[in-house]
Image 1 (cartoon, one colour):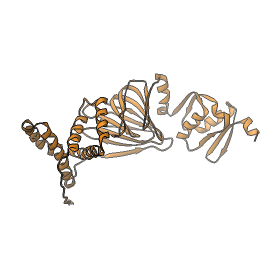
Image 2 (cartoon, rainbow, N blue to C red):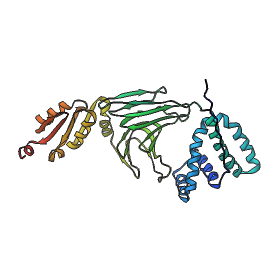
Image 3 (cartoon, rainbow, N blue to C red):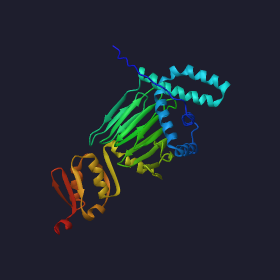
Length: 334
């Protein structure tokens, strides 16, 4: 049985802001979009709140309207023909009206949309997702992703944690990763994405990728990555640095269940072990400044504690699910 809903919809006359918004929306969808054009559009946003509202309203409608392309195509063809008679302004106005009209159609008949599947790993867990197109996503500890695979594109939302992507490039079906209000666009790539409370870190291992801000209202920032490039992005900044193949290889040791440290402060070592284990480590005093070298099983915190006590000469005190590391001299002074 079909549940039919009746909806009334009325479309106001297209304003100048809506006409310009339709023009920007069309240009933004083209392949030749550049940072210079983004800057022009941002300047147009800044002119008035009406401009922003018009674009946002049309953008939301256009998202649904794209799914109705088969219904819209004959009407668009008539608009193109009308444009030869009435000029480009008439085309833009008609485009606004069609986008608005698509909202009414959508409320009457919901189109079929790609399913979104959610995958997660527990603390200390790892999982490899094999997609139908040959791409793979490896999830590290305590990670959550949502995956949507459609005929026109492939999208992944990294909601928490860390994931390594090996993507089969397909220009007709772009692969995009969304994380921390940024997006990573695959250009035939192997890359690592790590999320933090207020930052995003993308390390490119092979191929090419583009990292860009997702917000419409922030100043546009983007970076095109080459192998060895590492981008750290926040809500207001984006920095790029170069890493050696060895460093990137060490950062990916978790794929083999290992952690590799190279003169790493004990405070950072403790932080990494805590990502993978239920037993949490704490470090006190100057012990945190000690530099650690070596390769350790990520899920075996007991082995590391034995090394900390017998090799590094630290005092280890365990209370429940917490193990505290301190210099022996420090504890003797208490």
